[in-house]
Image 1 (cartoon, chains in turn cyan, brown):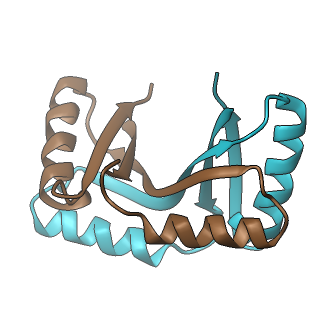
Image 2: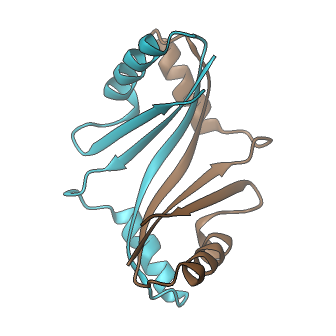
Length: 81
Length: 81
């Protein structure tokens, strides 16, 4: 069993309306020190394999095929234990 | 300027329909090794302050008030450099 965490973030050059909305809400609540805020997705995945190299290759394909929209999003993943 | 990352995850005891849907989609694509998949949110925040202690306190309040729904979600945050 291998645990992996995947982070999917919107590319720097792409607008993040959800983040902008949350930033505006924080300003309304008095948190004026918030200079920027961007929101991404975060996935915790358990893989039924013990082959780390294979797990990395498979995760890369999962990200490219389904988990991230690589036109506007970046992804990165790490394997645990 | 302090950079912070905030992770908001659905509590273990709470169903994650979005994660279940993505897991099902991965299975349909042939990634049968995916045993579990849970999706959370991930925020990159820039704070206009140099006081790390104050930043931590303020972030905690932001999470409790707006960023996480503490009834069904857990949060954690780390400060960078």
